[in-house]
Length: 168
Image (cartoon, rainbow, N blue to C red):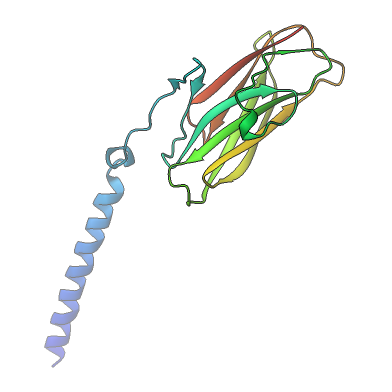
């Protein structure tokens, strides 16, 4: 009887070893080989860049600048020129592929001055659910210097969407 027990244990070990080797092969397969490629940034209808997340479940569908937080119906009203005392707000419109899905992610915004230097950088976690709007704002307490500025928006470290603006 002991002899059969050893055979069953040996057979069990063979099965476990086979399963573990299958797991190891899967783990060594590059992730990108099984995932659909992430689309690159592409021009939107008004020639601004639209980007997608590294996750195909969420995408940035619009980036607009204004001096107050905008509602989704206000997004077409673009503001590209500001005065030295304005607070600049970037409104980011996003959408999940599945409108019912709750997808965790991270939005990041970098504000860049006329000299090309980052003067403010901010990121926040967001749980995306269907179509949504998030905003970030920046102000210069001593007043903006005149010139061309830009803001860069990214989603989960994916491609960057850029919007330029002018302070007069």
